Amino acid sequence: MDFILEAAVRAVKTLFAIDISAESLSLQQTRKEFEGDVTLVVFPLTKFSKKSPEQTGTAIGEFLVNRLEAVESFNVIKGFLNLSLKNSYWLEVFYQKINQPGFGSFPSNGKKVMVEYSSPNTNKPLHLGHVRNNLLGYSVAEILKANGYEVIKANLVNDRGIHICKSMLAWQKFGNGETPESSGLKGDHLVGKYYVIFDKEYKKQIEELKNQGETEDDAKKNAPLIVEAQKMLQKWEQGDAQVITLWKEMNGWVYAGFEETYKKLGVDFDQYYYESNTYLLGKSIIDEGLEKGVFFKKPDSSVWIDLTADGLDEKLVLRADGTSVYMTQDLGTAQLKYDDYQTDKAINVVGNEQDYHFKVLYLILKKLGRSWAEGLYHLSYGMVDLPSGKMKSREGTVVDADDLIAEMEATAKEQTDILGKAADFPEVEKQDLYHTIGMGALKYFLLKVEPKKRLLFDPNESVDFQGNTGPFIQYTYARIRSVLTKGGFKDDTVFMPIKTVSPVEKDLIVQLEHYPAVLTEAAQAYSPAVIANYVYELAKLYNKFYHEESILKAEEEAVKQFRLKLSAVSAEIIQKAMHLLGIKVPERM
Image (cartoon, rainbow, N blue to C red):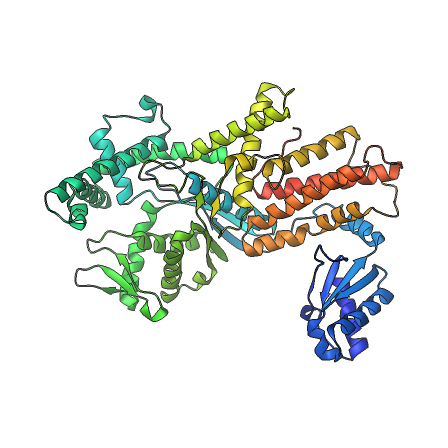
């Protein structure tokens, strides 16, 4: 729409004798309740025209209608000039812009960005919160890639610390040598089982000590299990061979389990980082900070930073016994990631309960003189709830990711079978379809909501074939593929020109034309919701077009071929947009 802005600049100079830049003008899509395609905001121009917004808009509207072939008519609502563009303009946009190779993708912009997501702990399986994290991180990475960034997908595995020692100690005490093979459990589920056992036994010990007269705080510190777990952590940091061997074995079980879940979710990574490899680098950064006076030691030898002058508080960065805390590890990890890739930007996809942690982390790095800390960004997201309530992992009531995936596939099977959408499919194709629909439902439901918002996930609602859901969009894509097959559509068909389009055809072209701008907006906001809601509107519009206009029985061959091509391009953009959400679209349903 640059040609409209350029013409508006000429209009202002001709009508009001003022030179302005195109950048100073605001052009936006006309709101649905008003007539028009694009809207020029004229409020700021009244200081030049010395007239009311309505008079200013009318003067510019008349100028544009007379000077621009593409502009058919205009109307002015208060300070908004709504312009309607001719059908011939939209047909040209379709053939010369939308129907061209590379539409909806951008060339390399020479910038490098790392998106770190998943970040699991190796003491328990992935849960519903991890699912939102993985899907959000993967989608943001794909959106940035489509915008021309070189993207590194990273996974920081929290493979050390007191919580890992809890699972290890419980397995030692209560496991009787149980393995994934002997138990038939996925490795991450087996280790998670012992994390829960530790918590139950630990609570029993706390109660016993309280009954003996200790305060709750003292009982929590003195319970034999927690004391043993802390000793195990110290041994791990000292490189004790027996502890390290057990740690490697149990973590190996967990990694095998994680990979199965990642494969089902359809997410991947280019680079893995392990906190066991970064915490020592973090400790060296603490030493550097002490030398620079950024950190200080308390009498018990613990190391802190005072951020009260920045409106925050004092923050522990190293324990008195010399063991690291999350902040120690995260300082080391941030440095290592930059050393490895020299990224322009690095995004941490982490839940909003860690907002304060990342504010402090980035501030510390800036105080340490790391110029690249300006490029760090915390993509914060809200909790996911199920109708049954909030997730609690330590109590053994976690909403397990594998169970959720299985439930989604079962729900998709139930809905698909009721509607008879796969009745004649071979069994293997049916199973693949159930997974595709189930994952499409899950991913779309979690990604259509802005990341910062907390959401309530309803599996049954997500698999509805009507409304703002993944299966509705998947079904629309399959419907288009069926139309193209029945119409014998070929990409290399030579088109006979048509002279006009119907209102719904024009609306569909307008929606398709917006795709590159939507792609840019989604990247700038780090928000897959922008893509999700765009593709839903596109699918809705296509279905309206499908019901209002005859495609295969069009009155003229040229019109039929145009409508088939419009269908093909719609399918292509739906497929591209859904790919950015990590969602597959089936060729038939």
